[in-house]
Image 1 (cartoon, helix red, strand yellow):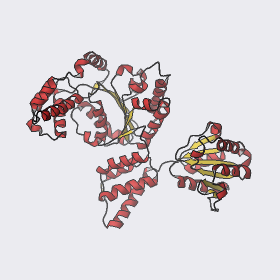
Image 2: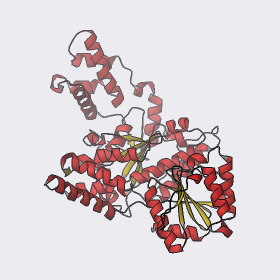
Image 3: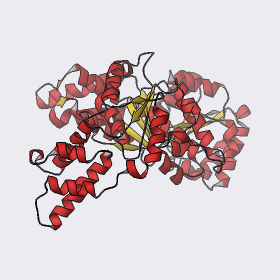
Image 4: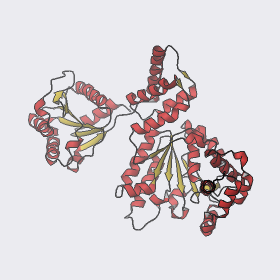
Length: 489
């Protein structure tokens, strides 16, 4: 894409109001100044601090009398001077400001004869309905990987100049760092690259998680998506053998954005059975950031705006690519419900359209506790690459889970009979095993005893697992998955 060509096309198409949502105000103004010269049109800039002034080659002085938004718009309307008028951070003066909205509409209505074009530049701006039909949105393109690579090289050269030594790195770590800077303006990319380099004088795989965290914060995604940290620790998680093999075969195709790259998977299983762990394992195995979209929370928080916020979440995931997008409990967002006014169907349509049209490296991992609530359009073959059934952990996997949770709490695993614990906990989910370890710890402390195998066996014996209390549901789920889903383990 060519920003100059595309923006010029909008201007020459006589669109009266152009909205540019960007954090790169200076870049947008520089682009307008360049186009003003090409089109032989004066370019004016406005801000509440300076008022109106020429910002192209003339660089005129500020007009303090036009610092007030209403005064600036009245001046533009009455002057009739053809040109490009860039209004910076005008968004606060549109909400509940009917005079300003009306003035913009009047300028837009006379734009054909006056030759005036208003360009509203803000980090975010909702176009009022009054002049929405006379407006168009324009987005500045993000820098290509070659430009991002050049930025990293310049920061490395500056480090060598400042510190008297070269930056240590390898090609794979460098390529992944540049890939993770995609979707950021050059200045933000420069800051993150500088931070990674000056931290320890090296670009390594250990820098990637921190860069992804900082990128997520810069993009201000909180509230729509959550960023899952420390996914690398799930790389060595036990079990999930078949799923891990499946992912290993497809990693290269995804990372290299090949034409047949995998799009995503569905994880089905009982609550607490390890689906969340499996979703995190995907990101850990591929060394990618993990974004979590909680459908239930999204509906509760943004009631009435669900479709728009799902679109925003998907757009943000594209910006964070390459990444793994985990949609947790997807049935809560698109499951059939006759009492939601059709919201679930519209959200499903939004998701299916994105899945069909998305070209960015976003690997979708959807988890579900209730497959019966999912519409057939989503779970049919070809929509997602595979459906995996995350069953209750097997005997050897339960033993691994006990070891993990005992080590996590500082206990010497060699002092416990994990084989006996595994056999005694048949039918337990991973979450129930963790809770058994926690509860046994409380019991041991209350008795002023050191935690041992007997405390754990006692807690296991006193626990009725979900596989017993919901045996009918589990049997129905296993029956549905037989022949329709691949065992994850």
